[in-house]
Image (cartoon, rainbow, N blue to C red; front, side):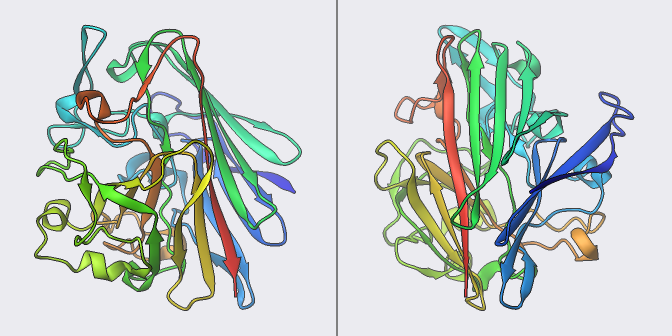
Amino acid sequence: MITKKLFGTVSDNFNYGKEVYAYTLANDSIELTVMEYGATILRARVNTPAGWRDTVCGYDALRSYEEAEGYLGAVVGRIGNRICRGKFSLDGVDYSLYINNGVNHLHGGKRGFDKKLWTATVSDDAVTFSAVSPDGEEGYPGTLTMSVTYTLTAEGGFKIAYRATTDKKTILNLTNHAYFNLAGEGYIGSHKILIDADRYLPTDDTLIPTGEIKSVKGTPFDFTEEKLISEGLEADDNEDIVIGGGIDHCLVFADRGEGVKERATVTSPDGSIVMKVFTDRPCVQFYSGNFLGDERYPFRGGKPQQRRHAFCLETQSMPDAINHENFLDCTLSAGEEFVTCTEYRFSVK
């Protein structure tokens, strides 16, 4: 079942006054609500024996999504994550991108895909959002035509499928920036987590990868066996944790063969909800909500927005890859199609 409801009207100068609709996909296990602004996940309610529980943090009003930082639930790009100093070269041509994160470019720039008003198409069991990023937008080359499709799965989760083509060689790293809290609210440290990643990317003090690809063994980023998130967060003597203000690092999966694979498992503090992450992407950015805390924008229902009260598992490729020869390729050429998917699957006790 899919229902459509007006969520708000845009207040910025680019799409002022345009209506934004939200779409809810529902079955007996899960209700997923997504909207046209940013192709954003507004909420994901899971049916537990104790009742429905919201597992994704969001806002009550469209205005908060327009104004607040954090990219809550949005599709981000063209490049999810950071590009050093907003500069790169592609086939001998130098490009400069908008600087919006200290000295770096982050999540697509001043008006990334999170600020786009996407076009929705509803089918029997899915909602697809489509958009075009013109050549030169935010400094990127090539006209990019893309779609993001949300579908509920029979296993109690939701799938995000991405497609994109370009008329000119460009760089691309699409992901979704949903903030999860399987308890519905509160500090995330009591969640248990397992991530099938044997390496991670150390960063400099601006959170740009140094170019090293290190083993997670003996570091706070070793989640190859289930442990509390707090065990990683509270490693205050670790240089990487200090730099990131917590966990905000790219973890590289152990086996990067083709196809969708189970990559992560998160269990709520009370053990009642387990979320598994399946993806065909080679990495995940594990972010522990270190920069949350803007009191002007409380979460849905008036819940306070607080630091480390939500986490992100952003499936993607390596950040700043275009500037590191030893990183995975992030280019997309004319005639090629970018196709990838990620599923967040829930089970309850």
